[in-house]
Image 1 (cartoon, one colour):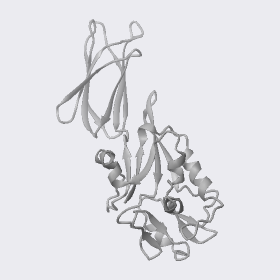
Image 2: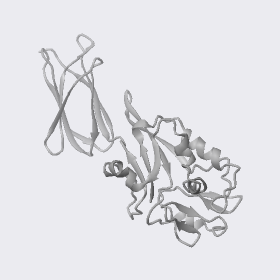
Image 3: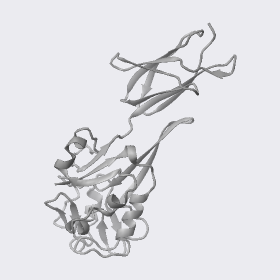
Image 4: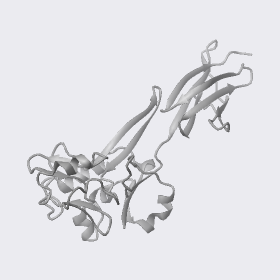
Length: 266
């Protein structure tokens, strides 16, 4: 069965996938799978931007977001919604007339309502192209190779280390994400007396389980600890010629810039 594999490491936020979807579906009738997508208001492939951290320690996350083509699709409230043998989930435009409950049942918010045609619509994986042995248009036009599509067994290695967007009721989605950014803690070491950053200071992070990670401040006095899980952390800094400093009970539920450590001269 088919899967989408999306490597966020290579997504640079160019919006090419979102534009490709519009290019393929706006003004084009791909019956029996799709009626034309409206020019505005629908984003069957949508690039989500999320800012993590606080200025000046921030990171942007880009995540292409589409129908998850679930093995247990909650939108399948009637026979207008079909799970194809290849794994794609489609909505029959003729059977779905007036069926707002299809849109309302999707826990991902990936189904849109076409007011003009009075039908629900969403990504169908470009089923008309897949039937012709081609790739979905968004995958074909992804300039960085962040989007991939194919047989599940061909992506076994990637799937083994991927994450998914899984709602509480469970849908068994067939879209996999690689290199989704975890939480981070960032900060800076400096000395206010000299008004200079401190390069090469040893920074120790104590994790919730008591284990530690270490790094050093860079040429700007900055330090980062990435790919962290929610929990309570502690950070300590030390550098030759300076008194050590630390912060305890750092509660991490979102990425944090914990600010400056002003290390006094010893």
